[in-house]
Image (cartoon, rainbow, N blue to C red; front, side, top):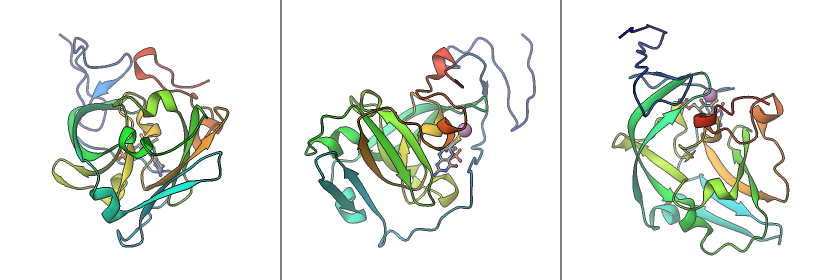
Length: 197
Ligand SMILES: Nc1nc2c(c(=O)[nH]1)N[C@H]1C(S)=C(S)[C@@H](COP(=O)(O)O)O[C@H]1N2
Ligand SMILES: [Mo]
């Protein structure tokens, strides 16, 4: 079987069923940030969900950690074509966070410290598919990878997993976030290669 080297110390294994089309495997954890890394003290950190009913629910760092914490073992896939298999995270499910939130809107915009945004449908946030994650590989999440906490939506391309996440605002329509305004797909399923639009 042919093995190609493609940067990031990557090896392509064409036969790996866990590898979406057009992706290669990497053992590294590349850093991809559109701007500088914001440094947020956990004492100043919070996560909020703002609804169309003019209610905002906010969790401090301690309040987030009082919620049920889940271990997540998952593969991640970047639209720049690297995939990393078997990553391990800890965080709080969006199902838990939305349990007490009243909204009729089907879409959300994720907002990050530093200004990044990305749009996500509720169908991709609920049902055990998304977390606010604060540990990677048994360690607190590195600032470069989005610490103190990032969104983790591993069934979509990794640009949806907003680093330094600070909250969600519900939206009626699937209005585009930062990369989506710049040509990335509104949805971003790696298995059907929803890369651009
Ligand atoms: N706030 C913020 N989140 C972000 C980004 C960013 O530039 N800013 N880049 C996205 C992209 S394109 C990717 S591939 C992943 C990269 O995450 P990593 O640097 O931990 O590998 O973060 C996503 N989340
Ligand atoms: Mo990316």
